[in-house]
Length: 134
Image 1 (cartoon, helix red, strand yellow):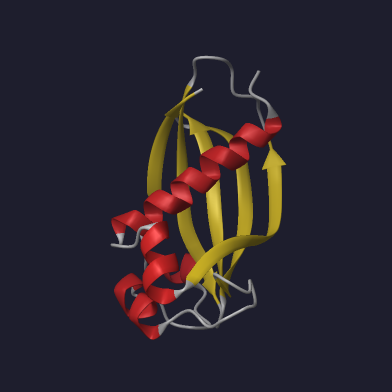
Image 2 (cartoon, one colour):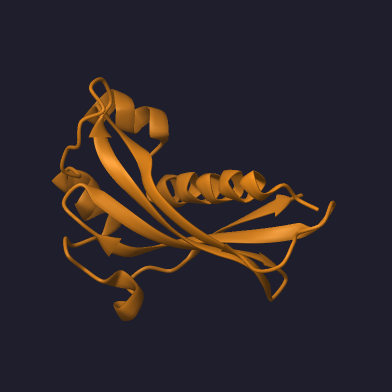
């Protein structure tokens, strides 16, 4: 069986790919905007185990956006079978001080996000999937 923390690695990779698909590399965010996104809070439900050599798909979509944070809804699936789901809140912080900072307008505009939006209900964003071999 897959170790429980491995699911968190898969989810982080999916969030990074979600950003990349929108034109933002993590290193570029740190260099250009002097910011990083860090996990602030995590709630996860493990529903079924992934097994060695399973092919799993991990999704990431923004459920909610605040001034300095995003909450992602994420799922890990084996085919259509849901293995785990999570709500992951990430904070936008200054790269040097790790103090909260607002998500820059340029990033908001590029991501098509509006503050205070409940994005899951309106389905403004398509899920971003990453396929991983366990």
